[in-house]
Length: 592
Image 1 (cartoon, one colour):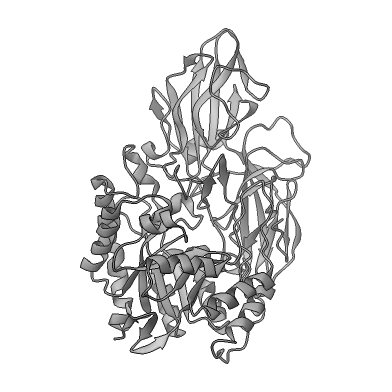
Image 2 (image 1 turned 180 degrees about the vertical axis):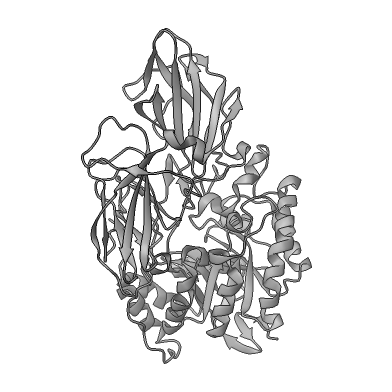
């Protein structure tokens, strides 16, 4: 049993002064086979602490069904950190942000459309309490007070940037304590008045998050908390990317210089991120300021370790600064993991989505469109179909509201895209609108809607997916819908046929493309998707994440543990098509 306490402006571990030098690594963004490698590199850099968020949606994907296996095995991650002599800081759900889908909230919370997230709403608190009954029991054996490595836990994440419901924060604090969490509890917020006023609790350690100007940030924290240790819980040493934007890069010399100032101030620090990893599957989040901005698959973050876990110039610069303040451990720096370049791979088989509907989904009848959440669906795609009687002259197709992007078909013929950022559902007709003319006898309207990631931060956090209200042709709402949920978690039921040797323009609609890759050795590699438009990639049934020609990201990271010697199955779900069904497996990433 150990103690981690506060005495004046310093932390004490078993009665001796200690400074936290921590780094964020999210176990769920790294394949488990690489957890120990990444933790060892963190320790070799001079860090004494690893910090991780805990996404509720990963651990309770369906209400009452819990998952703590594989990439969700957080206790194994904690055990590995303990074996290496590292402290652990846990930032548990309910809300984590972290550019993760819905900020870590499970989609099923939105089945109750009146729910008030991050508040004292009794319905919301009931769901949190049921989750905490399971989650906190996982952590209790690993608290430092029980001989484990966990020295501190966060109450809520940057709550002051969202709200000021102190009863809610207190409910979480008491909920942790009554479930046996007896380590240091803390909050973390931006270094502004309204954030620190809204997000902190009396007698709970407040910490601040920033990327620059540490002295100003700490001075603001000291105005509110003059008598406790000064901590930067998130030192933003890089940044994340949105689709259609530039790849973010931050100079390592600048990052090292700011760290030097943080440590010279006498503060503790936690890097966000030490190692970013990957938003595998459909777990990327999104932001919304003046428009919807989905996050890319890579969470490289321009961190100290790159997406593939390799040491960077930033790592070496930070290690040098840390060495000025603490003795660095005598650990040899590991060599980069081997990478392989296989060159072009021909996608030799294919299957059309519309032809495979009965293998992937069961039709649901509804008089009106309903959201994914109302159907118990979390991620992926959803298809809405209805028959429109005719004849009708050209009229505007309007969707209230699309979340987030729909491919429109009339009698199986592609009509265009409706995007939440550009679509105006009013009666006004613009050049970008889709106008439909319905022939005598009617026509079938199909809308394939993609959930591109629920918003993970800010005032539009409640972000149901699919069609949220209705579909109109002109002024008239359309009814009598057939709906197919397409989470695309299991593609094993697909039946593939040989792909034509030459492009076939008669093949319409989204398609699954397949290749069999035979390997005599395995190593990390990067899937290059030049010439493809938009979709998701799967290797041996594992969803690597999304790709999109708008960039900046051009390759998807394929960790070696996802591969096997012998035959490997690569499937692309391509929404729009390609003139050359060829991919490339190369030994270098391209993040833009």
